[in-house]
Length: 296
Image (cartoon, rainbow, N blue to C red; front, side, top):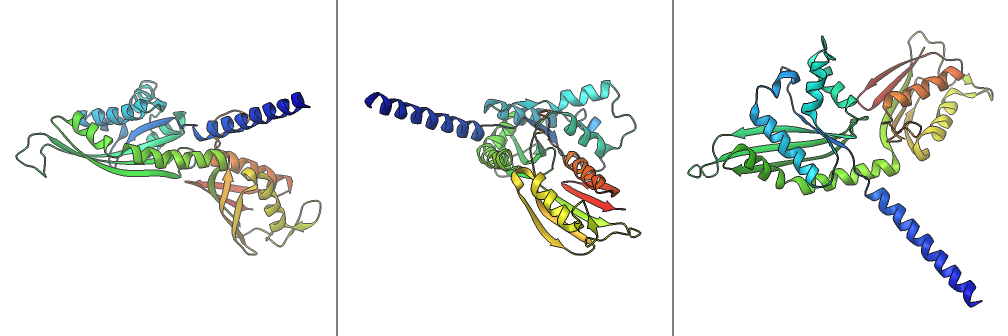
């Protein structure tokens, strides 16, 4: 009996340790990050870094800060040069180039850096040095959800030192917020909106019978969402005879089959196949993290 009790205690301790290990593993999953420069509509991402040494230095310092804290980073400058060398983006507009580099980077999160350098210290004009303000905004790559944003100011004898100080003043809070939200996405999925409506010439409504059970189309859609949303987590904001709006549908961060980022487009494909199984033709549009489905 004593040996049996000891064995039970050992098994329980091992199970508890395993659970703690699994919990720790989830909590310590870190995103792969790429730092990108903020650009205005009139700026061409292909030349903005080449024309501004200070921006290249600052981006390098921000990336270095993430590297020093154990994050895996993707070098935006290297990806941009490779894309230019291979003429990947010939003829593309400026906005598409930046978006495509981000999507093709393999990063989980991209951090957009707005950089405002000044040649003098405005707070202390008599003190030599450079002053810089850096605004960091982190976004989840495949869904575009905002994860964190912070502003930091730094002063240094050169732009590199000023950038280091600016990043140092904000990096811990920035990363803590970003990591907490990213961990929530890993555990509970990322949020997308799904708007389902009808073409003006469509002969269907949400009250139309659909499927083998002859249920209302709206009921078929809701049951599909319950079965296919990540961990069955979704919220139906409203439904009428002409529209259904899901304002929070959770989808996985990674495709379980490939390990690649699971995109809104991928979820839209699954929804397209569902409607096809009901004998319905649909049109899909994606804007940010919102999926629009139009039933023909």
